[in-house]
Image (tube, rainbow, N blue to C red; front, side, top):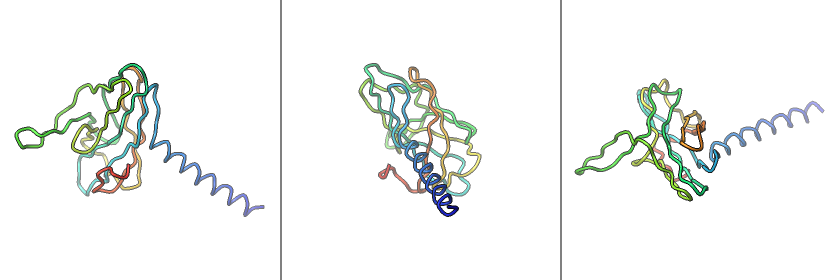
Length: 156
């Protein structure tokens, strides 16, 4: 009986971990579905990192991503990378429109959540929270999964 209880407890812990991982890969807020929130592990000494997610609006009205925040960094902003005069630039994106029945991808070399002044390195396999604030859907605590340092998102 004791062996059965131990196996049952192990199964529940494993199932709970899978549930947490599954929820980290799809979260819902109002008409929005946030798919596969992820980040890269940061190399030693790095003071900044980024988080990525696909935001799908399943509703009939547009929404807007207003801001981002996180306890893992001194400053968190939504940024846009782009090419200007053969040079890569990065600047705050401001308000990001999420069209009705549309998608917006926060991904490497484009829109992303920039985390500056990291309080500790991002380690592969860890998770952290980024709070996204939307005009209609409100605040969403996004569970971000840390991947490999050279991850470009193909697996996510």
